[in-house]
Structures are given as structure tokens and as C-alpha cells.
Length: 218
Image (cartoon, rainbow, N blue to C red; front, side, top):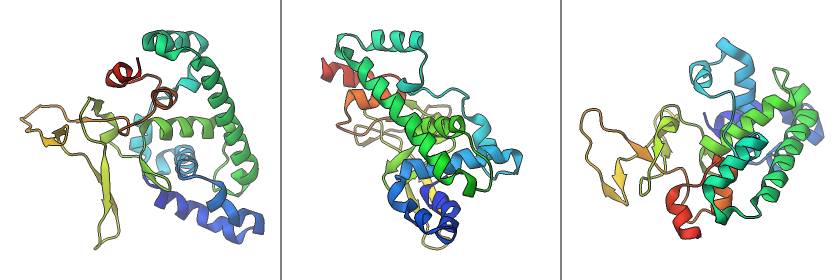
């Protein structure tokens, strides 16, 4: 599920009203993809992506989506390095909900299904915590997003086939850039964060900070 698919969904907005034609500038790739995910979720079993969407959790792990109690526990797990992060979480929470409200108010009635602010907020959380790629080209990849994080593992990657024009995602079995042989039943790992990612950004998107980032942050 890619931002290319999202743009196919949003393309008809350009013919509905002049103001809506600016959606490409107004909506970052992550928001475009979240709108597609929210729409497909509302389509239920009619959606091509229904099996994948059913595998997604009802609650998103992002720090801004956590309950007060769960947030306190997550901050405690980070340790002293998380001092002052409560304010950043509050700002992020407010920003996400404001973005979702704006999207629903401006574009909601022009989409093929009715969406609520909660629908878009849920989808944004899934995109922030699971997607890979860089704006404006972002994707969600079934199965790959089930892989566990490990230090030194690669990020998921993708390509567009020149013959059929379809997008494909893959993950290499490697550790710190070196090939990692796999036997039957061996687990494939990915990295949840880009190299040099800020620990606070990781916390906001994932709800935790990978241990290797904590050691650098202290």
C-alpha cells in the first residue's frame, strides 16, 4: 500500500473544486497514505487490502496515542533521558488530532466513504509507526511490518517493476551491512528507525526507544 495508490484515490479531488486541487501541497505523503488506509478500512471486506488491514491493531503504539498510565510507564522505561518529553508528547498529540480534524473537514465529504476524525487518527498512527520510505514516497508492507527490530538490521526497501509498473517491497537478511545467512525457521529482522534518528522522534512514532539509541542518548 503506497502513496502512489493514495494519489490515485485523491486525484479526482482536482476536478471537484479549485481549492481542493492543492491537496498535493497540503497533504504530506504520510497523510496521503493515512487517508488511503482509513478509506480502505471503512470499505471492509470490499477492500483489496482487507486481509492486511484486519491484521493491524485497534490501538496504535505511538507515544501520543498512549493512555496517561501507559505513557508514564513508557517514559520510565526510557529513563532519565526522557526528562521533559511529556510536553513534546502533548504537542504531538494535539498536532495529530488537529491534522486529522482538518483533513476530515476539508476533504472528508469528497471521499468515496465517510470518515471520522478517529478513523484518520488511527490511520496516521499506523503510518507513523509502520511505514517506510521518505516523503513523498511512503509505503506500508504486509508481512514486513511484522518483523521485529534488531540493531544493525536493515530498513525495508522497495522498487517499482519496469515491466508491470507495480510496487514491490523487500528486506535483506543482513547485520551491519553484511549478509546474514538464514536457515529454516530463522527470523528476519528489520530496523524500525533510520540511521541518526532522534530518540524523541522514535519515541513519538513507536512508543519506545530502541535500546541502542538509548545508550547513545545517555
